[in-house]
Image (tube, rainbow, N blue to C red):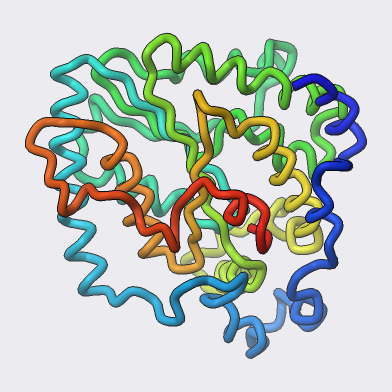
Length: 308
C-alpha cells in the first residue's frame, strides 16, 4: 500500500496504462443528446452487446422469473441458517450510475424477513459526519448477529463519485485507498462475511438508461445532476475504478465484477455468487452453483480488460 498517496493524488498510475486509452464509443457519444426523444440507433444497437458482452439477446422474462424464484427460495433458506448460526453478512453493491444496483438489491430482499435483512443507502454526509473519521458513519449500519445488510453504494463513494466530481481532496482519496483494506480486514476478522460486487456496464448501456430516465415520466426522478455530469466523465470514472481495484481487491475482501448490460442476468448472478459462497442447511447445489463465468468473476480481464 506504500505509495498510495502519490499515485492516487495525481490520478495517474504508471502501473495502469489502460485508463489512458481513448474513450470507447466516443463517436456514439458525440451523437448523443439526452434532450432528443429519439435515441441514436448506434447507441441502441450496442446497449446490450457493448464492451463485448457475451450474450447477444436479453434473457427471456419467463426463464428469468423461474430462475429468480428458485434463487429467492435459496435466499430464504440462507437467511434461516444465518439467524440460526448467528452469522453476519454484508453485501456491498457498487457500479456506475444506472448500472442496476437498486434492482439487484430489490430482488435480493424481496422475500427476506425485513427484521433481519435491510438495505442501506446513505444520503450526503451531514456537516457533523463530514468532520468525522470517514468510515465512522458506516459502522452503525453493520449487522448484528443473525442479520444481513446490503449497501446500495458504500464507503466506496470516495473512490468513485467523490474523486471524479471533486468532492474530496487528493490527500483524502489517498488516505481512503490506503485505509479501506484495513477497515475491511477488521470487519472480516470480527466475523463478518463481506461481499463486494461491482456491476459493470458498457457506455452505450449507460447512455440508453439515462435517455430512458429522461423521457419516461415514471423514471425521471432517477435522473440526477450527477448522472448528467457523468456522461462526459466516462474516462475519469474508468481511471478511478482501476485504482479502486488495484488498491482494494484483497484476499480478505475481494471484488467480484458482474457484467450488467442485461439486468436480468446480473440480478441472478449477484444472488448466486452469495449463495454459492456460503454453506447452509438444505442447500440446492443445482441452483446455488458457481456464477456464470461469462458474467461474473474476479479476473484481470473483468477488472481492466475492456473497460467497465
